[in-house]
Image 1 (spheres, one colour):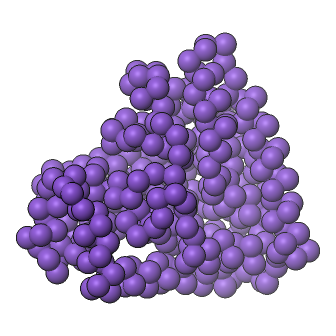
Image 2 (cartoon, one colour; image 1 turned 90 degrees about the vertical axis):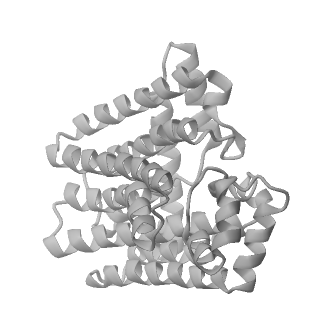
Image 3 (cartoon, helix red, strand yellow; image 1 turned 180 degrees about the vertical axis):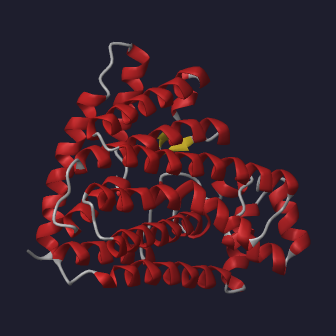
Length: 319
């Protein structure tokens, strides 16, 4: 089976996953059902289920792959509901953020509802070790988000702190997707470590690409205005480098949340002029290579090729 055939089969699995997700989230509480409908219609890239299912394919198919794929997507979706409220976000996936339509309480409690369904799925697997793995990912995710606020409050901006933030808020869950498949398949120690490393490195590349696109991308492709991270007080690799090169000007823009006339355009221009944007793309490339190198322990198969291609997409992804 070639990579194209694997990806075709993956799309079929994802369609089945959407149907299972729809049934899992049904509720006779109208406001919960409305947010459920939002979640289903907004779609998204479903990257985390893709990682789980492709990792299962790489191992020849593992028990409870669907439950794992659904669980990681539910955890991700729950955190999005909570994060949008915390960040006072306007837009999510090209639509008005849920809390702005239904209110803070409904949005937070609906996120809790998603987490309850995730726990149900994990119980269905009967694998306590998987519960521990996802619990640890959830802990690191929450700590990453809180640490991001701490860094902003203390203006403690550094490369190490930035990487700690994105490792917690993104890479830890990506790692759980791939390592979870290895756990369910009782994979050999070196194979489990390889998949854990792949998930972590891919997650780092993915978040760096997201951060890069937030400043250097196209607002139409993204479905939201550029510079959202600056407006939310988040420091990324681009703004870190610009702070070092233009401390007074860039610090002023960050302090006022990029709300001055032409602030975001100025940061974009500086990033291009100074070569910062190009350097960040180089950083992303480094993480992509680390992810791909981790899979060297596996023989050449279509599933391995699909995972390598998924990582490579972070070099060109536009949204």
